[in-house]
Length: 353
Image 1 (cartoon, rainbow, N blue to C red):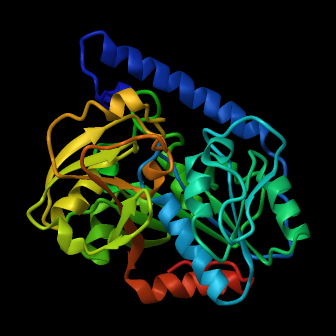
Image 2 (spheres, helix red, strand yellow):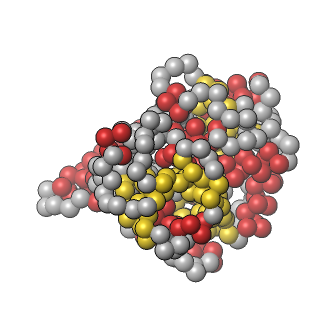
């Protein structure tokens, strides 16, 4: 199985006009929904930091959310990381997934993104579509700081001290188009509501100043930063043994992923010297044994992401070694970015730069 083709990537004399019409209807529906959510958001006596985007998937939200939670944990704030719980089993919400010492429930119950967060240490993890309810419960159980993963579309639920908006460079360069004619869930005008924009997938060597100049004006109302994925190591699957990144150098690799933007993962492997053959599935795909037993080619090494690893069947007996690429968020320029974050962690509001 390969990743599905997104609607806006298809072409045809009838298909393109239809997508434009549906995109217009989507815009009208979005405007009506925004009016319906006109209430004031809940204000809590705790710092709230939000990471989100205007587009569908693949911008690095989870990686940045963990970086913020880690920063708060190192400052002794006892953070809670809140997310919707996409792909989780039905049940009572909000649901506590981790108290900060590993997962309390399996990935089927929490969804893959929450399971990925729960594998870290130092922050609690909660899931629930109502961020205000989840935040209130987290505070009641001792959280002194709240980090929202994919929180931009839920601005009306919970007030925040810092709103970070992530976007893929290639998607911006392709122009503004709402679903299903394009990848954007909200008009670009909403980017002005963010305190800072973090751009992933930018060309190598493009610094923040050049990046800002390359963005349309809608994306430059606040601070602009570059976001990259910095590999930190490999872990064996299963087992979790550590392996050096040098293992990838000149190695034929199957890049197994179910991501919104798999090319970022694959490019990272190429930068590490791997000879990459993509093995793509749709975003959040639940891998079956039959699929995994039919790789698209031979390779001595299969490499996947932390998010994808939690969806691998425990009963899979791979013919090749399987490794999980560990990576962290690298934001540049770093100093002004972390000043914004630290000001928000102290309970202040972000200052535009």
